[in-house]
Length: 175
Image (cartoon, rainbow, N blue to C red; front, side):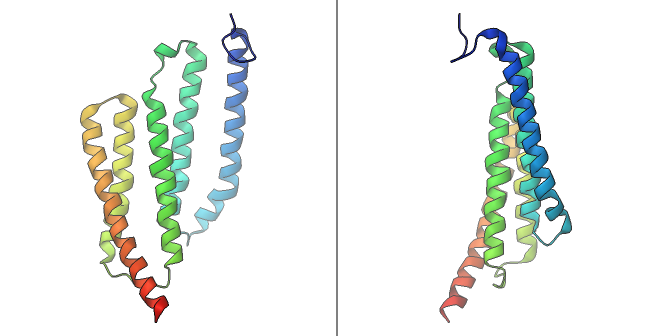
């Protein structure tokens, strides 16, 4: 019986191992190109967080693939790890990158909100996400119920601060 499109079941483990190797090489290339730039500083905390969450998302996904290859039984694998990997990628990476881009585009605009509000939003979003990821990965509903609202409030705070910056920068462009 053929388990895949082109390969039989005996090739699953070999193909999975090649996939893991290629993904590890991709993460290594990313680390070699991006991490030195982030470590030099001046790129913003959202870009640093996005870079860190690339490793979290890929680590969770690669661990899931490893578990699947090792067991060979899809029923024995914790597929909540893929949800955690997706959240790390979409909120941890993409949301932080969008916020970093907005900050870069509005660099000349003064803040209309207190500086601590942006800091509180940043930490609430990212720490809330980490708590939520633990809850997803371990399937702990109580942990998810704590992480999700903290993460959501943090995102709303950062959106508010950035909306005020965008509003200010649009006003400066018209004058």
